[in-house]
Length: 346
Image (tube, rainbow, N blue to C red; front, side, top):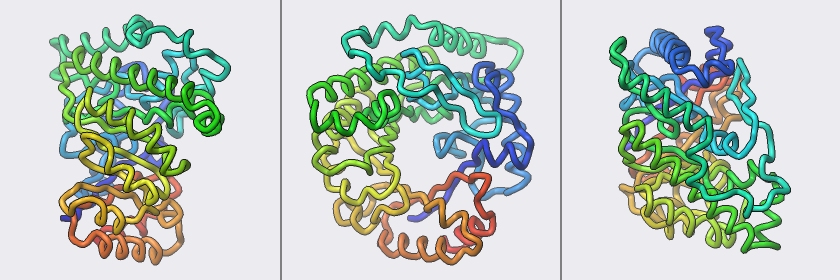
């Protein structure tokens, strides 16, 4: 079975609707709820019933989205962890927010303390209080969606440990994996434990059972199969054993990693970049193994839909009637005609 769904970016809504995503948007759930509601009302009027709505890039899912959901701490996972480690949040009114860079560069892992100590941070206390206020308020029938979750489905989101390490110390992590593998592994294991602690905490506080764990190992396409097997496979498998079935995401061309992905314990679905070979995935995994894939940004930006139509045709042929979802995140510079051409092709 083949389906298609998408999400709308902040950049697109800032341009089309004039929505502003300032600091208060991220740390005031009431204001966020107001803006999120306005954005989704606009998207529905603009696009109708094509399975698209406003969310972080393919994190929320329309079938699990509720008008009553109020997102608390809706910030990318590695940015939340980064703020707990000293990074500053950097909002952008017209696009996604970010954090100040390299919060662990030059620091010793021995100085990080036990991951459980993160729960005492003022940011976690703030989010806990906001969740409690929403869920125990008699004024509105709202349900708080806690940090690391994006809808009522129970799918939790974290970044992969290597991708997070790159965010915190920079590209040096790739050289460290070769020259200081034990030290790199220790850092990644600490990051994994921190994510597990945080996901379990907010699952409990937000009364949100974990149905599966999305692990965004965005940088994995940048390393060899051997390094992926050495670092990513064992730690991702451990996270899956502690939190639940794994949905693994990789950006870019990840064909060379598909066989190694098969060794990840509790892996239930792959979410890959558009350059990755679906034929290779079907060669390694069974047909009913769920796969999602996103078209390339350059094809979405093109003046004509020829390339995105060509891409979709190849993906459908390579899929060989397997379980496939084509996903997209509509950015402000995408050509909307290419989106309609993609739907016609599917």
